[in-house]
Length: 129
Image 1 (tube, rainbow, N blue to C red):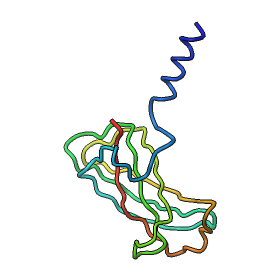
Image 2: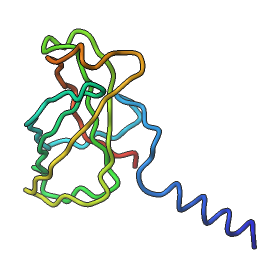
Image 3: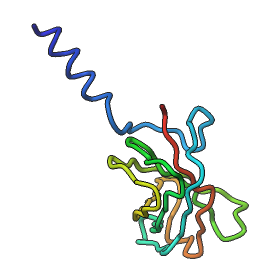
């Protein structure tokens, strides 16, 4: 009985959003025909943040779990990468529907307040299925 409960718990923990994702991985299946806007970039002194909107321009619903990711750069030349961030969506987005998204990046290796003019690029959504 304990073994069965352990297996069930393991399955439940592995379903849904993963916590250890590699930004820019080629193993992911990118979802195309979506559009992104970047509506707000701001720093908090300890993190770099971006907020925006994504729209499903497909003729089909995008089902969860799927992820959004982006790379954070020192400035708008996109020549020096600070790092990346991703987040998981646990709800579907129907054709023609938009949703808000946000990402946050922080690292012990940098002082985020040194990059008030940071930029975000290489935004994509993908699934691991």
